[in-house]
Amino acid sequence: MPETLIAAFSATLALPGLGWVLIVTVLAGVVYGFAGFGAALVFMPVATAFIPVETAIAAFAVSAIASLVTVVPRAWAAADKRAVVWMIAV
Image (cartoon, rainbow, N blue to C red; front, side, top):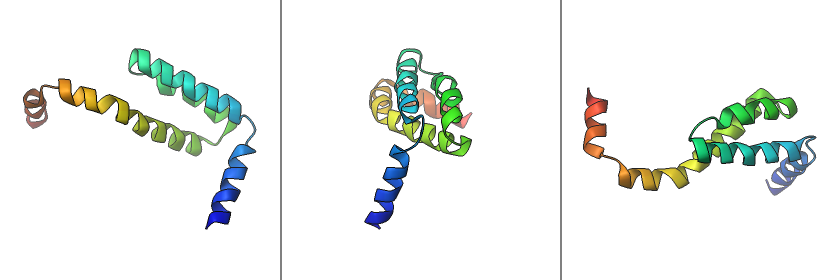
């Protein structure tokens, strides 16, 4: 198993355009941080130029899930939970 992980990691580091994908990932995060949306509009065109579309979608999904760690705790504290339950019910 460790050999497989090492081989996968080595293949990822050898990916042409990895630097550009990392730069655009940070840029997309900044866009999301300021606007709250639009990260995919920045990330997907550049990422799909270097990696397969399926991989780009998976990478974006993982980064979006990771952003929940920073957004959800403050949003949960500020949310009107009663109104949210009402909107979901109706």
